Image 1 (cartoon, helix red, strand yellow):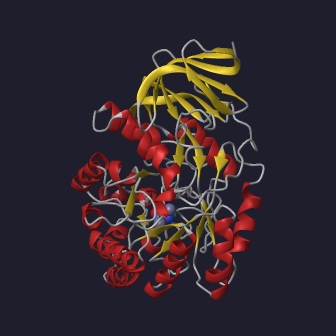
Image 2 (image 1 turned 30 degrees about the horizontal axis):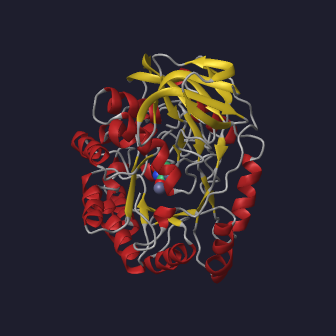
Amino acid sequence: MTVHQMVIRNGKIATAADVFTCDIGITNGKIVALGENLDGDEVIDATGKIVLPGGVDAHLHLDQPTGDGSVMADDFHTGTRSAACGGTTTVIPFACQQKGDTIRNAVNDYHTRAEGRAVVDYAFHLIVTETTDQVLGQELPALIEEGYTSFKIYMTYDALKLNDREILEVLSVARRDGAMAMIHAENTDCIAWLTDKLEQAGQTAPHFHGASRPQIVEREATHRAISLAELVDVPVLIVHVSGQAAIEQIRWAQNRGFRVYAETCPQYLFLTADDMEADNFEGAKCICSPPPRDKESQQDVWRGIENGTFQVFSSDHAPFRFDDPKGKKIGGTKADFKSIPNGVPGVETRLPLLFSEGVVKGRIDLRRFVELTAANPARIYGLYPRKGTIAVGADADIAIWDPHRTVEITNDILHHNVDYTPYQGIEVQGWPTTVLSRGTYVVKDGEYCGTEGHGKFLKCEKPDPAKPKGMGRMI
Ligand code: DUC
Ligand code: ZN
Ligand code: ZN
């Protein structure tokens, strides 16, 4: 009888398709057998536990250069360490083109930042900020062939944004060469106009960030992004959707059969605009874009998670320290909201929050949990079935969850390099207690035990879901 290097025994296994009980045989970092009474040199008894594919966090920012002097607190080491401790074994952060520079240089620079540092495997999305002939005609096609098969387009932020004509050009490349386009949908002129009005009225405290980017701003840009994609006839994925106004546009498009995918994040389920009103500048901790909305919006986002509007649940981990002149306080504690770095940390809490409020509370089942957090992001970004599932031939990226363990989220239990969590004090039920990356422990019995440099770069395939209608299948 074959003796595997490792066997996980008696666990309740969930994939996006099924929930079943069997043993998992692992050899040389791969899942090589699923069956009963498997033999292994090392046996993990998973009786009473839930065995899931390691999470795929397809939207997070690690060691990404910023334009304003702020510095991200997490690099590839601390960011992937934190990911692993929250049950995530693949991350896809962004190699961001600096205006005036090539995307190739951004990719090379990002490899230097990642090389030898990551604890779990990683791929790169690209961020396209300039649409020169060289970018459209040479760089993007070559990079797509080399395994960078997704890119993000910004409709706002001066250092990043593209206008509609430029977006059409980039979407055309996505269609021609088979890449997945992700869109940050907020109307930049509306934000600038509202920001000026708020400033003129002296309304510059952190919570006015929310007033400068109301839902209509996101709704308009979401509809426009969908229309541009329709014109080009290419699928798009709308990232970090915050509430009903944008959800309605996405649903409208999906109901017409357009290949419009959507992502949401924990901040839109667990935070509201009120959190940006906390005293002593603490509201800055929850500033992100699009901003958190209200309690009703949280329910709208839950409904989108339940009814299939959303395909992906990511963290959008954007790690700026609070008490730091290179973080949220870069402009001091009296700073105008517009100079506060945008983003909240959440790579480690993404899965426990959704597991507890989603699965344990009965809003979604385990299969849907796996679909949103692992299988779909792997499919949509060309990593499936190597990542995102438990199947023979897949990488042995596995998170064993104790579904009964209750944990109060406090910053001191987390493994990121940020000095706060916006989810401080929330009690969750369910936490990953053992995590494997390609068959190697990164978390064992609740303790982090990963190795810097274990994580390897992943080339992404051209994703099937990026194919226009008639050329491939919807996920
Ligand atoms: N919004 C983004 O678009 N990216 C990083 C963080 C944020 O709040
Ligand atoms: Zn964004
Ligand atoms: Zn982001």
